[in-house]
Length: 174
Image 1 (spheres, rainbow, N blue to C red):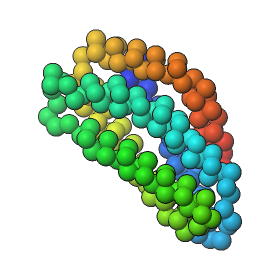
Image 2: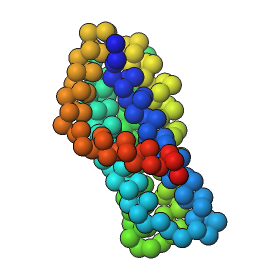
Image 3: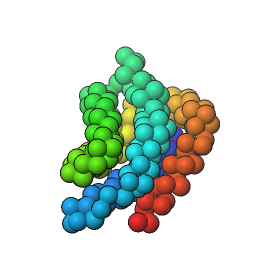
Image 4: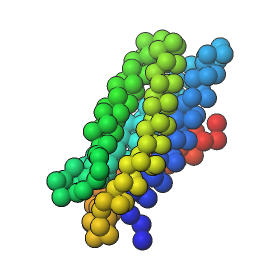
């Protein structure tokens, strides 16, 4: 049976593909390539919609809320750090977009690299620390309830998911 942590971890693979493409593109800019505005616009759209609205919303509104309940027992709770990193990522994307609009190549490079590094480290922590802790702390019944909530949230954002997956595939082939 699927559970919310497995679902979220699967989504991470698509976010990583885009982060790697972003790193590659920023490295190419450092070597003199001109800014591919369309790529960066699609990347920003992917991050804001698939990674944030679709994926992070399920973490923040479903999983993290459950993990922060007093009845959930974990030896420590890293969700506040994960929330901080989500907010930091949003700030970096805002700065990346500003660099693109200002035609400031250095700002695009700096914020693109910083976001890609942050999200890859963040995903590593979730997949290898937080999610296993959640799996241990949550009962099968609660896992099932959370997965049902996640599926309901996904149904409302089907178009966002499909557009995000299409771009992740495109980015992964760059």
